[in-house]
Image (cartoon, rainbow, N blue to C red; front, side, top):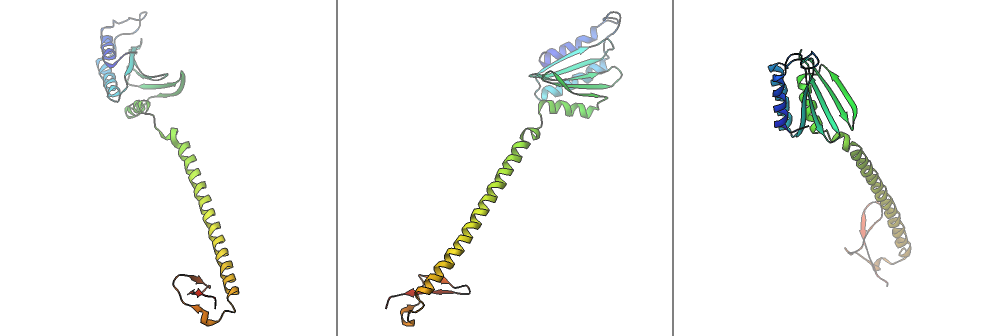
Length: 195
């Protein structure tokens, strides 16, 4: 594993391989393949992937490895143009794709470097939403209970007021803006005095 400069230097060194370098097999990868792989390495470096490495095989293919902690993504560029991708997390292979398109290669390099946060936060968002819904439901029920209790208390207070002063003479009841009392249809403002 190395930085981009070392990886590209190693990639270009594959041009110097002799035919049959591996037990009578193999040879240097084509210049076009080396240039193609270099473009992917440069894009990955631009996206912040700092650790990468390259290898070549006896069929003139090039394997590119990108590494982040215990995770890696390996892309094999075959001499015939096919591309295979393998992804490992914590040493376990989690994906293997043959004949992957160029657009998907870039997408996979991007998501390797910047994993989507949806999977990380979805449960938290769901739990928070459920808690807020429960809190709002509890608040609504509390306010409703208070309103029912308030209506009941107001009705009780009004009926006591009416009973207490039912026999009071009309001369002792004087209008006043300070004591609004509602008797169901329209509010009446009363000022009660003892005669």
